[in-house]
Length: 266
Length: 333
Image (cartoon, rainbow over all chains, first blue to last red):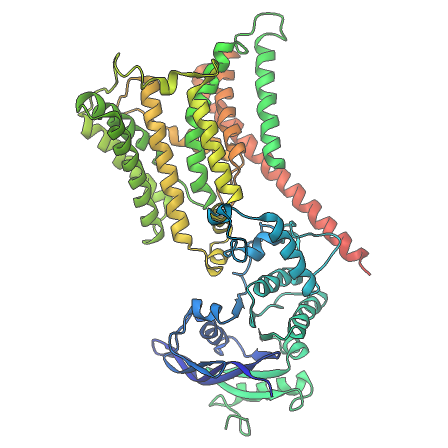
């Protein structure tokens, strides 16, 4: 059985009188792709911000590789190998691919030479490293190089840069915040291909989306959120088509309490 | 790089054209191409270029500094006041003035990052405050060095290698340091990244506040250096007018040199060319017998044409990029 990377137990978070999350539990194991589904306001963003350490939960427990964690924050989350690719905040589109991949950690991994300590950039080694990362996730083209401007790439390719960036940070778990929103079918397939390559390297992905067809196409396991609660956890064996899952979610939306009869949470 | 080359080519073109028109295509003696005039243009380019490099750092972060002229007034008046009236040693005079300038930048940076005030408003208030301080501190009395401090005044009078004006040499050294900082170090990359997408930079772990504060300190510090140099050069500092509009020349030079007021874009070589271009245009107005009253109008139009052409070229190249991209998609198997 695969070991869990991170486990959230009974997490609650409120903002004033609004309960964004109410007793949510989630576990992500090594090498799996978890699809996090839910409508706007379901609590997806709050949950990933807790995973990323941006928000601190009001109550509940966080376990990292089965060890309890008390001081959970953004820096701890990153040090633990969790990288989040936020929808609009991931890239500086006017800059090159290599600059984006190394943004914020330019000196990491470079030699401890005097120039490096003074903050000088070793462009040559960064370029080679960027090429390797792009190759690893199958992100190659005859048109662009690591020195190409991100703004000239398609939406799917930009996600590729963001994923390559997360890999450079040695992420064990990559959280992708709605990476296929507003992408065409071809571009979505490109993102899926990047995610599959990440999975093949033994890393895990939490794939957030409200387009169930997209999430269904890539995830091994699904977690459905509704009004701050997990209303379903299932695999493709439980729901074999996206339509079945959509049917369940419609039932949830129509039910008064937010949880239809017969759901796995009850 | 292409943009900087374009600015440099434009500078050379305006320079040559002015000289050719002024001398009626060398049919009479050219005063514009005269060594003395070129020396003067280089000297003023040096003085304004230092300010333009300073404001370039701030513009790269997406900010603006409108207080440069008043800060030049304050530091330019304070420096001779300390040295001549108070008998402060030269080294202490430098230290006090530059420390004051850096502190001004620090306060600007803190107000903009920690209180989230608009750079425009913060530095506009600075424009009034520092001008007022300069006038109050000097009692509206003209400041200068008279015939003393001739050694110190070599900072602007000395000719490096016998022909390069000292302010221009200072500009070259400042420019090299600034270009290395912006292009080859991680801190330069941080500045460019945060100017383009502050959230992305912050989410990447960059301490964006610290970088913005650094940019404002550099800008004010270079304005302080400018204040000292202008005071030494002119040797007569009228606190109510000294440095008036200099912030606009600095900003215009930076923008002409390729800095985008949207942030995230700027090259030091381009900014130096931009500052030189302003100086050449000012000279062109004089040498081509254009009425001197229309100097501002000419400068305004040249900047407007420059940024318009830049925007059109950018759009054209973006469109070409999109077409190439589309072609690749179509051609791909």
